Length: 456
Image (cartoon, rainbow, N blue to C red; front, side, top):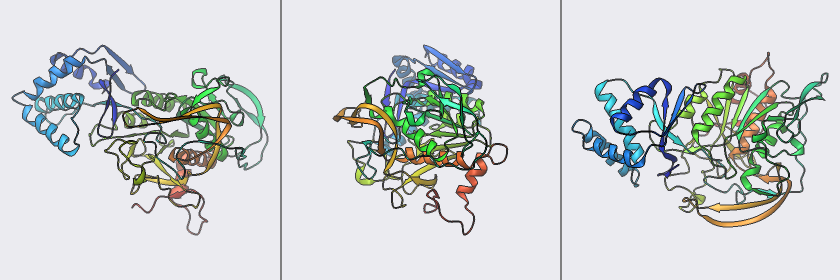
């Protein structure tokens, strides 16, 4: 696996993602360029294929031939010069290969374009770039208990999932009817720590759950539990379906996220929370794999994604972020069409400094500073890294299962929880609940989740 860190983006430079319908055409084109992939993985649920292990020497030789091709070489070289002038960093060979393949098809079949793109590296938007949020952006130990969930409605008790064991779902505990009853929420994140405050609220496979007997963790190990806590505090009866797509360093890849999204889309979810993202260049294929995945959900499913924490220009130093990221840079999937992008409010109800601005792709703003939630129980190594991945500082802090934290990741969790709380299966869909948040009734008292109107 080879990782390329570009002007603002990260991707695997020996991989291509291709629509299944175009796979035969693209592999034929690769063969014509004397490129022989080592592996092809197909996802029927996603409708895409991951073409990987492209030999570096073969890719470079093919690009060299394409740039000297008498038909498309001039246009390909112009593309390279324009991109390198706009982003003063050498363009990746994979970018030139993709452009060259597109130019070949455009020359042979005018008006037709294959679906092909790169495997980007989504990460926790609270951690990459690592920017502040009222404090230093790190989780902090607290003796404060996780806020009890708001209990709505009454009603007779019914069987509900009792939790994950470590990772083993058990059914049978009886709970009163509460907000979020019968609502299914998908949570794609890191592995979840089986906090006692979350018992009875989630379903996860063993591989998606952290070992509670561990005594040492990374700060990212507590991310999923914290987001889950934000959801559960709003919708205590919602059924969380947890799938880990990020590792203990908060890093994952678009292919894995997209496959999990497509598989979850078959589960009849009401709300999906994605507290992750990646900053991209102006490559027109940039969000292709995630955009394709999101389209698999029904019209009634609402996908919520966190904006990046890149809004505070004082925090955007070369040591902390890619030099191409600006305070108004969009992150994906939050900026995708039909995805609810969420930014954070501070404790005074004002836009948090780290929330991107201006950002018209952010739909809602929710509390994201000074939050208390479930976390790991044990010693946590908190590290800061520069944009090249090198550790610049490190300390070990002990947590007793709860933390205070801030970030757009958790604002997204609050929105997902509120949507689940307002959803009543068979009566009010999550999409209708979203309309209530986006377009509140005239004269209705302002809640703590508000539409983002200042960027229009």
